[in-house]
Length: 86
Image (tube, rainbow, N blue to C red; front, side):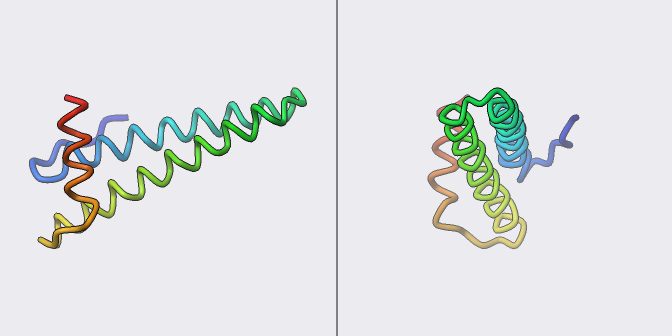
């Protein structure tokens, strides 16, 4: 799925989309591990899915704040992460 590039939100929304894809993967791994009886691995994968979702929420909050013209406490941290990833 392609996320439309918006000059002001593109990178932030791409980050959110990537984090959500990672969360989906980790949730599927957790589900499969439960079926296999690997509870410890399921727990670890569920936690990483939760962390990825939290990161996606932070990115989306940043995009919303940017759209409203409001700075957020997480904006600077997210900007640093995006620059480091590039």
